[in-house]
Length: 388
Ligand SMILES: Cc1cc2ncn([C@H]3O[C@H](COP(=O)(O)O)[C@@H](O)[C@H]3O)c2cc1C
Ligand SMILES: O=C(O)c1cccnc1
Image (cartoon, rainbow, N blue to C red; front, side, top):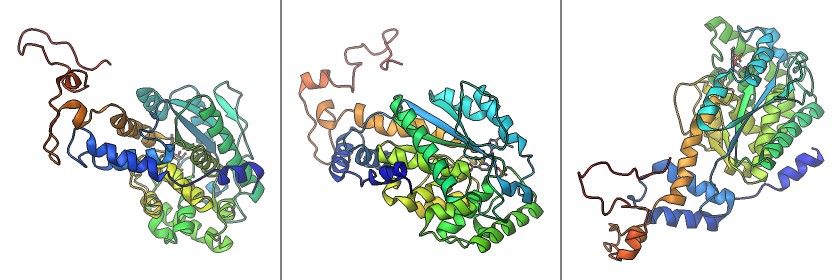
């Protein structure tokens, strides 16, 4: 591996059972029926285990990193879009015009754009991190997409970007990607790690006809037959059939896990990179939050393999980080509940389990539930309860 990657992997540890037990117990005391927040309760407990404290820190601020790279396998006709669109979209990201920019503004997340392997030289921009490892991968049906060294250097780019964003104050990281043809290496990685047939985990990407889909599946079969990558050697798999942005996202996830911050996964590209991260460091899964379920069939296969369930299912098939950004307010709300919701004892609400509402008037008046006490009902305008 490399010194930086080694250090990152060694720092990844198990969830803190004590903090999880505390969060579970606190969820049971909040003024709501036990279990009524469904999967948000499980999520809050998991995030307490990750942070080793209950309640875990608020998820804001959040930062998206969009890793961009090109793909040699584009030459095999696996996508209708010309390769130039990767560079053109990078320009769109840095000028704030892509979907991920709009969605990130909606939720108050920052967007950082990283060139880890775009095939052409990009004009310098104060909004673009130039971390190009090489100008696109090689064609995986002919040779390995990357050398091992290139794959490791791209992983290190992801580690460095995670550090940069966390050091700048981000609490939650969000994965983003851009790379025309990148659903092909994603499906290849997913087939390699899950053992699923490429015909089952390969989707339509940006939108292809059935003839192109057939070709895409055969291209993936050919690459896997050529390299016979072993999941026991995750970096080898990544180098043979992955992409530079997949490698960077792998490093980004590993560093988030090492520093015990949540990382929200976007669609099929992120899910395939998450398989690489989990194969390198199984405990990194603790830090992963599945933002949404991409239409790409490989995403469901990867998430099942990781035992993660997606928060949203909106029929998205875009990438860039869009689905993960949309999930951010849900993750934030899950944590906020542990910080702000009153407990049965402090709020004077009768708990079905104990039947003993606290009648203590002082405590009731200082609780966060019932702040409208004292307002005559129906007598003119009433102050809003929540500050914005
Ligand atoms: C205009 C445009 C914006 C995008 N934003 C994300 N993707 C997404 O689509 C591409 C993967 O699909 P495929 O494997 O079929 O080429 C990636 O660039 C991914 O980020 C886009 C694609 C296009 C065309
Ligand atoms: O799931 C994704 O992220 C995705 C799906 C189709 C095309 N690009 C990205």
